Length: 435
Image (cartoon, rainbow, N blue to C red; front, side, top):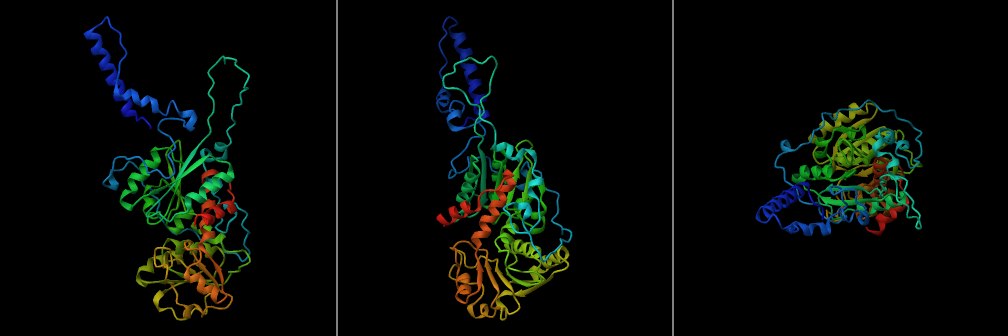
């Protein structure tokens, strides 16, 4: 149990008052002061810090399944103490397209998105944090040191996932496996956060020693208002899924690793240069797919949506960002012919476990109009093989599931947090074992 500063100050004041009262009643007696607060010392994190690897009372590690401690609710976004980002999600300069892509080497900087995350990390997030030398003492040595010596304790980093609902999330298993592969002592918690509790959760993460966190639906866009800095990856996707917290300044910086995850899951032998892509949906996953496909050199991207008028602003933004690519929108429920599509992507929740899992975004008859060498990609990872993927495999189309995208974006997140690359295979095995 952690003792708050306020509680400790109250305890000192009560102790002093009682000592003074006893002194006035009987100055000759010098009995020890007794208080109900004395019981707290038996569970104080100060006494148990060596056993729990805790550095201070305000930065203790909770069990991953434990809900955050309660804190004051904030009824309005204007009442919080955070500085919202003044960055606007404006189009970025045209990014060069190439027919020859560099194979993924496990480093974010070498992915198709060509974003050097590592170089943007502050020294506080360098891997020196995870390589502190441990002081070794001899078991037979009892020499009293001539000066105060601070014995270093294992550094435990805290990370989390926020979003709602999160009952289906595999992120904890994936990231724990990643940290283990790096030899890093870190916890990863699942913190369910409805939109109306976002302010409180961000405040909690900033004030309780977290080094970073992931963000999932429906918070990827609302979280942008809390960022002090926004990386280019999040700027163009217009959503954030990874955040770093500077331990010295409290500065929040937002990234998006979905585009890297999406693009890296596409095998290098799949040639998309000068090809046509069809994307079902226009949400955050669709934007990530657009960015990744643009960097693979596609010629045209067709967006299929339920409401064409609502996609006009997105189309204008994408046309400015990628002027060499043709963007058009089509009514998703009017799909009849896909014969010009080289890669078809489902970026909708249709087919997700617990969310229309028995449905497919494209009927089998229309799916069969794809060219025989077309690629079918579903960003959904649960179930591993959606009805959409099963139908595609039935007709011998090459398929890509959302599992590899999920794990690759998690790899990129850990690279941002630690400056090091975790083991992809270990993380994927952990995901599959817990699916």
